[in-house]
Length: 338
Image (tube, rainbow, N blue to C red; front, side):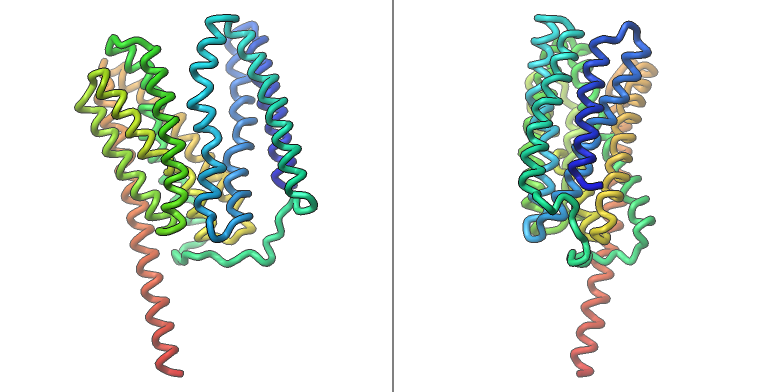
């Protein structure tokens, strides 16, 4: 049905979800409409990255990274705004106002997008270039591997993003400091995403993701050993700088290694897996904290999952290299024969 229809449906669900949250009379309706908020917001992330990958060939990595940066920009801006609004007018009015604003603002953006696309609302993949990377894996197998990798990296990623506010409160610094660190983390994530896009255009999505995953693990390790207020600000900035480009790299890998006609579906599956990883990671980190009384074990759990992601990406990189070397050998043999 095209990107415009998908985003239009998402806008309606998202806005009504926020308005419904503000009107909720008990916890269960509130939880239910938050599922609607998640469903609506999903239409503006994975599908947009897949769409951006279709429109660009030379600077595909940068285009995907820019498309994926919107939620980080929002993540850096909205927390202090929402916190101020809740303190000023209450959480109900804040939810309703956010719902109305998002529907209006995103509807305007969608109209502009539709005007720019013109008659090409749905992209034709007939003349799309073939995949750049031959991993000698079926699309289903590669999708499964990327999905497992995205779950692993996002379990690790969720620990600071979900628990940094509570962590600061537990250390006695106050939740306001934690909210500032979260905004700092997401703000530097914007820089990371744009930078990773440039990097992916030069070295490819697999290498970019592997570099980001190794760097993310380094930041998680720093959280284990340092917990002063100043060090947490620095580590949070580093964490945002290191991990911001990981998730968009999955979309780039999909377009590099799979047919264009399958990109939106495959990107959607992998991004869905990453959200599962974020959800599970946030929950299991809380369980570990409740069981141990410390966040150190939760950070170590994140490191273990991060190691799984590194292992999978390293395996894909080695497979890509082996496939490329075989192709070069066959090409050289044909040239000698001719």
